[in-house]
Length: 231
Image (tube, rainbow, N blue to C red; front, side, top):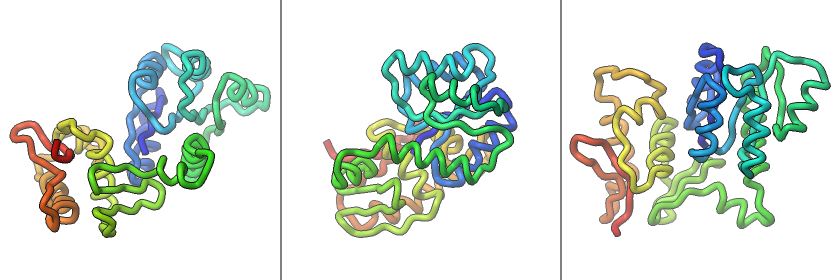
Protein backbone atom coordinates (compact mmCIF):
# COMPACT_ATOMS: atom_id res chain seq x y z
CA UNK A 1 0.00 0.00 0.00
CA UNK A 2 1.45 3.38 -1.03
CA UNK A 3 0.49 6.53 0.91
CA UNK A 4 1.25 10.23 0.38
CA UNK A 5 1.38 12.56 3.39
CA UNK A 6 1.04 16.30 2.71
CA UNK A 7 1.77 18.05 6.00
CA UNK A 8 3.79 21.25 6.52
CA UNK A 9 4.82 20.37 10.09
CA UNK A 10 7.82 18.11 9.49
CA UNK A 11 7.67 16.48 12.93
CA UNK A 12 4.03 15.52 12.44
CA UNK A 13 4.72 14.26 8.92
CA UNK A 14 7.70 12.19 10.11
CA UNK A 15 5.63 10.75 12.98
CA UNK A 16 2.84 9.64 10.65
CA UNK A 17 5.27 8.30 8.05
CA UNK A 18 7.18 6.29 10.64
CA UNK A 19 3.99 4.66 11.91
CA UNK A 20 2.75 3.82 8.42
CA UNK A 21 6.10 2.31 7.45
CA UNK A 22 6.14 0.21 10.60
CA UNK A 23 2.76 -1.11 9.41
CA UNK A 24 4.42 -2.20 6.18
CA UNK A 25 3.29 0.66 3.94
CA UNK A 26 5.32 2.61 1.39
CA UNK A 27 5.18 6.31 2.27
CA UNK A 28 6.10 9.58 0.56
CA UNK A 29 5.95 12.92 2.36
CA UNK A 30 5.93 16.54 1.24
CA UNK A 31 5.44 19.82 3.08
CA UNK A 32 4.04 22.08 0.37
CA UNK A 33 0.61 22.07 -1.21
CA UNK A 34 1.80 22.66 -4.77
CA UNK A 35 4.28 19.78 -4.57
CA UNK A 36 1.63 17.52 -3.04
CA UNK A 37 -0.85 18.29 -5.81
CA UNK A 38 1.79 17.56 -8.49
CA UNK A 39 2.73 14.25 -6.86
CA UNK A 40 -0.87 13.09 -6.72
CA UNK A 41 -1.33 13.89 -10.41
CA UNK A 42 1.92 12.27 -11.56
CA UNK A 43 2.22 9.26 -9.26
CA UNK A 44 -0.24 6.57 -8.21
CA UNK A 45 -1.12 6.39 -4.50
CA UNK A 46 -3.59 4.20 -2.66
CA UNK A 47 -4.51 7.12 -0.37
CA UNK A 48 -3.32 10.52 0.85
CA UNK A 49 -3.35 12.23 4.24
CA UNK A 50 -3.67 15.98 3.68
CA UNK A 51 -3.36 18.86 6.14
CA UNK A 52 -5.64 21.86 5.55
CA UNK A 53 -3.23 24.70 6.29
CA UNK A 54 -0.33 24.39 3.84
CA UNK A 55 2.08 26.73 2.05
CA UNK A 56 1.17 27.05 -1.61
CA UNK A 57 -2.15 25.34 -2.28
CA UNK A 58 -4.14 24.68 0.90
CA UNK A 59 -5.47 21.19 1.52
CA UNK A 60 -9.05 21.87 0.43
CA UNK A 61 -7.87 23.50 -2.80
CA UNK A 62 -5.72 20.44 -3.53
CA UNK A 63 -8.74 18.16 -3.12
CA UNK A 64 -11.03 20.37 -5.20
CA UNK A 65 -8.48 20.60 -8.03
CA UNK A 66 -7.82 16.85 -7.98
CA UNK A 67 -11.50 16.00 -8.23
CA UNK A 68 -11.88 18.41 -11.17
CA UNK A 69 -9.04 16.48 -12.85
CA UNK A 70 -10.97 13.26 -12.28
CA UNK A 71 -8.49 11.92 -9.73
CA UNK A 72 -10.35 9.84 -7.14
CA UNK A 73 -7.45 9.00 -4.80
CA UNK A 74 -8.96 8.51 -1.30
CA UNK A 75 -8.05 11.49 0.89
CA UNK A 76 -8.21 11.86 4.65
CA UNK A 77 -8.12 15.47 5.80
CA UNK A 78 -6.16 16.43 8.92
CA UNK A 79 -6.97 19.75 10.52
CA UNK A 80 -6.82 21.71 13.76
CA UNK A 81 -10.23 23.13 12.86
CA UNK A 82 -12.98 21.55 14.92
CA UNK A 83 -16.28 23.10 13.84
CA UNK A 84 -18.91 20.96 12.11
CA UNK A 85 -19.16 23.54 9.32
CA UNK A 86 -15.46 23.22 8.53
CA UNK A 87 -15.67 19.43 8.49
CA UNK A 88 -18.67 19.53 6.15
CA UNK A 89 -16.76 21.87 3.84
CA UNK A 90 -13.85 19.43 3.69
CA UNK A 91 -16.12 16.55 2.70
CA UNK A 92 -18.06 18.74 0.25
CA UNK A 93 -14.80 19.62 -1.53
CA UNK A 94 -14.22 15.92 -2.15
CA UNK A 95 -12.44 14.69 0.97
CA UNK A 96 -13.29 11.14 2.01
CA UNK A 97 -12.73 11.42 5.77
CA UNK A 98 -11.77 14.07 8.32
CA UNK A 99 -9.75 13.92 11.54
CA UNK A 100 -9.03 16.72 13.99
CA UNK A 101 -5.61 17.36 15.55
CA UNK A 102 -4.45 16.12 17.98
CA UNK A 103 -5.35 12.64 16.78
CA UNK A 104 -4.87 9.00 17.73
CA UNK A 105 -2.43 7.36 15.33
CA UNK A 106 -4.08 3.95 15.72
CA UNK A 107 -7.38 5.51 14.63
CA UNK A 108 -5.68 7.31 11.75
CA UNK A 109 -4.18 4.15 10.30
CA UNK A 110 -7.45 2.22 10.64
CA UNK A 111 -9.35 5.00 8.86
CA UNK A 112 -6.82 5.17 6.02
CA UNK A 113 -6.96 1.39 5.58
CA UNK A 114 -10.76 1.58 5.51
CA UNK A 115 -10.64 4.30 2.82
CA UNK A 116 -8.38 2.17 0.65
CA UNK A 117 -10.60 -0.89 1.10
CA UNK A 118 -13.69 1.07 0.08
CA UNK A 119 -11.98 2.61 -2.93
CA UNK A 120 -10.86 -0.79 -4.16
CA UNK A 121 -14.15 -2.54 -3.40
CA UNK A 122 -15.23 -4.17 -6.67
CA UNK A 123 -18.62 -5.51 -7.57
CA UNK A 124 -17.95 -9.10 -6.55
CA UNK A 125 -15.66 -11.00 -4.21
CA UNK A 126 -13.44 -12.40 -6.96
CA UNK A 127 -12.66 -8.91 -8.28
CA UNK A 128 -12.02 -7.69 -4.74
CA UNK A 129 -9.49 -10.44 -4.14
CA UNK A 130 -7.82 -9.69 -7.47
CA UNK A 131 -7.50 -5.96 -6.67
CA UNK A 132 -5.57 -6.73 -3.50
CA UNK A 133 -3.11 -9.18 -5.05
CA UNK A 134 0.08 -8.23 -6.89
CA UNK A 135 1.49 -10.79 -9.35
CA UNK A 136 4.76 -11.23 -11.19
CA UNK A 137 5.15 -14.56 -13.01
CA UNK A 138 4.12 -17.21 -10.46
CA UNK A 139 4.84 -14.94 -7.49
CA UNK A 140 1.82 -13.47 -5.65
CA UNK A 141 1.61 -10.91 -2.85
CA UNK A 142 -1.68 -10.31 -1.04
CA UNK A 143 -1.56 -6.80 0.42
CA UNK A 144 -4.46 -7.28 2.84
CA UNK A 145 -3.76 -10.73 4.24
CA UNK A 146 -0.01 -9.98 3.99
CA UNK A 147 0.64 -13.39 2.48
CA UNK A 148 3.13 -14.28 -0.22
CA UNK A 149 3.08 -17.33 -2.48
CA UNK A 150 5.19 -18.70 -5.29
CA UNK A 151 3.80 -21.41 -7.52
CA UNK A 152 1.01 -21.75 -4.95
CA UNK A 153 3.43 -22.40 -2.08
CA UNK A 154 3.29 -20.07 0.94
CA UNK A 155 6.37 -17.96 1.68
CA UNK A 156 6.88 -16.83 5.26
CA UNK A 157 8.13 -13.22 5.25
CA UNK A 158 9.15 -10.90 8.07
CA UNK A 159 7.88 -7.30 7.98
CA UNK A 160 10.91 -5.80 6.20
CA UNK A 161 11.04 -8.68 3.72
CA UNK A 162 7.37 -8.13 2.89
CA UNK A 163 7.92 -4.38 2.48
CA UNK A 164 10.91 -4.93 0.20
CA UNK A 165 9.03 -7.45 -1.93
CA UNK A 166 6.07 -5.07 -2.25
CA UNK A 167 8.42 -2.24 -3.23
CA UNK A 168 10.15 -4.39 -5.86
CA UNK A 169 6.83 -5.65 -7.26
CA UNK A 170 5.42 -2.14 -7.49
CA UNK A 171 8.51 -1.27 -9.52
CA UNK A 172 8.47 -4.44 -11.64
CA UNK A 173 11.00 -4.19 -14.45
CA UNK A 174 12.56 -1.00 -13.04
CA UNK A 175 15.91 -0.93 -11.29
CA UNK A 176 15.66 0.39 -7.72
CA UNK A 177 18.79 1.68 -6.02
CA UNK A 178 19.99 0.83 -2.53
CA UNK A 179 19.29 4.44 -1.58
CA UNK A 180 15.65 4.19 -2.65
CA UNK A 181 15.30 0.94 -0.69
CA UNK A 182 16.77 2.61 2.40
CA UNK A 183 14.29 5.47 2.03
CA UNK A 184 11.18 3.41 1.29
CA UNK A 185 11.75 0.24 3.33
CA UNK A 186 13.99 1.38 6.18
CA UNK A 187 12.94 5.07 6.42
CA UNK A 188 16.59 6.18 6.26
CA UNK A 189 17.28 9.49 4.53
CA UNK A 190 21.02 8.90 4.82
CA UNK A 191 23.53 6.14 4.09
CA UNK A 192 24.03 4.22 7.37
CA UNK A 193 27.30 2.81 5.99
CA UNK A 194 26.16 -0.77 6.54
CA UNK A 195 25.13 -3.61 4.26
CA UNK A 196 21.55 -3.80 5.57
CA UNK A 197 20.08 -3.68 2.05
CA UNK A 198 22.35 -6.45 0.77
CA UNK A 199 21.46 -8.63 3.76
CA UNK A 200 17.72 -8.03 3.30
CA UNK A 201 17.86 -8.76 -0.43
CA UNK A 202 19.85 -11.94 0.26
CA UNK A 203 17.22 -13.12 2.77
CA UNK A 204 14.38 -12.35 0.37
CA UNK A 205 16.10 -14.12 -2.51
CA UNK A 206 16.57 -17.23 -0.40
CA UNK A 207 12.82 -17.36 0.15
CA UNK A 208 11.57 -16.24 -3.28
CA UNK A 209 14.12 -17.65 -5.74
CA UNK A 210 16.27 -20.37 -4.20
CA UNK A 211 13.94 -23.28 -4.87
CA UNK A 212 13.08 -22.24 -8.44
CA UNK A 213 14.89 -22.38 -11.77
CA UNK A 214 13.54 -19.00 -12.89
CA UNK A 215 15.03 -16.25 -10.76
CA UNK A 216 12.94 -13.10 -10.31
CA UNK A 217 15.21 -10.85 -8.20
CA UNK A 218 18.25 -9.67 -10.13
CA UNK A 219 21.28 -7.53 -9.26
CA UNK A 220 22.18 -4.74 -11.68
CA UNK A 221 25.83 -4.10 -10.89
CA UNK A 222 26.52 -0.56 -9.75
CA UNK A 223 22.84 0.41 -9.89
CA UNK A 224 20.68 -1.72 -7.60
CA UNK A 225 18.08 -4.47 -7.93
CA UNK A 226 15.19 -5.31 -10.21
CA UNK A 227 12.33 -7.81 -9.97
CA UNK A 228 11.27 -9.14 -13.35
CA UNK A 229 10.32 -12.34 -15.15
CA UNK A 230 12.00 -13.70 -18.24
CA UNK A 231 10.96 -11.85 -21.37
